[in-house]
Image (cartoon, rainbow, N blue to C red; front, side, top):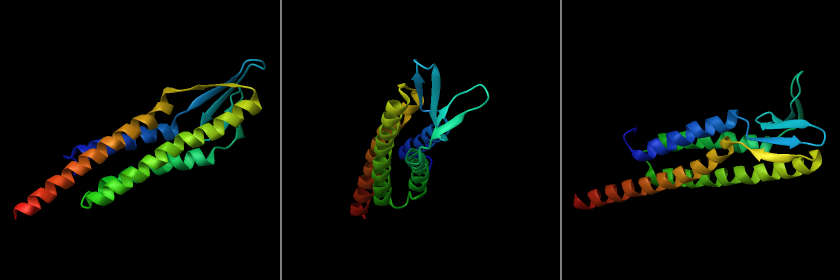
Length: 155
């Protein structure tokens, strides 16, 4: 199972997605009122010295962020059925793209409402890396399937 390259790609997706779940994604800065907001798994929070105050929740973004590593793990352990692996990886790619859609849907109105400028952190680029890794995993799974079919013809 671990000797296959697609497993390495899928494990990298699990690790990067886990980092995305628990790290801040973006900063919202209101320069006029000198306010700093943080976007993480808790929601959009106003950062204060006494503690963060959650302004709004980001449930859709959280749910998509949690589904991606779980689905990648399920894909790793369904190694005996390569077509199912390809399907799961394509579904995972849809979830990764929907992560960015949800991020835009949450950040855009929040910036307008809070009169803030948004600044993405490097962690918000990890889903894009996951998308590339998913594509590479699909290619590797397809090569394995072709190899198995060619060996079946020789029997």
